[in-house]
Image 1 (spheres, rainbow, N blue to C red):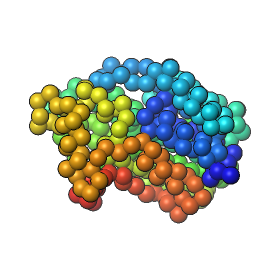
Image 2: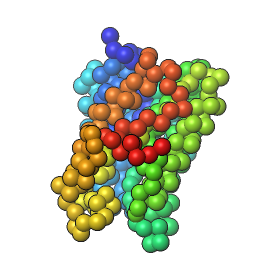
Image 3: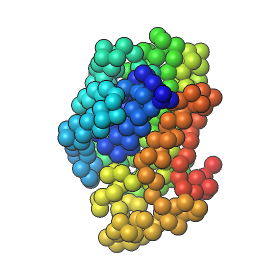
Image 4: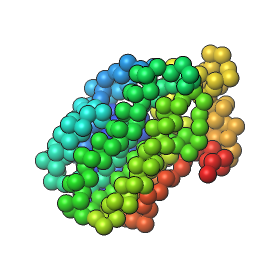
Length: 276
């Protein structure tokens, strides 16, 4: 028996990276999965986003575990599209037990140089997208008086990061949104938490377009420069693998997560030692 037998999880940003890892981890523990992803470019994002093929591949990997997976192309920036995702989940499976509001993008520039589009796209996906995901799913959970919600923030949700004011602001906002919703949902038996990873080995950061934001003091930095930078953060400063984050998520949504509520759980290889 799995830890999540016959539960239903909705996961945003599920085409690849942490979203794919979460989908496979929860499916391996018995959950049926609904994944959604924009699966299309966003102009201000300097690296390729997931594709239709990535979304289909995640669904296939989930189904190899023996669980069902519904894959939906949807943009978290759209309230109506997220409402449709929730409605499809309920139509297919009868309920939603778990929401992982995971979709996110990264871009950056010094605030004095950042254009409006770069700012707005990041806020729209990384913060408003979380709100839209909550707003779509929470009424279904309230009706059943049960549910577990986990949102993806970042270690920079507790610190600053030069050249990434848009991303930092969004991830700080996610923590405030999570803590507020946790308070609001106490009477309904629903828990709401955030995970705050440091650098995770996913396509979002494992690409040359993002290396300068992570290693601003080196001209034309390489992957080796990025890994060397993370290695300076003791005691375990290497890049996190998505499965490590997925195991934290599994704790929060499983039987032993019931007393975690309104929490912001850091997974940062030592970076959080320098934050409050």
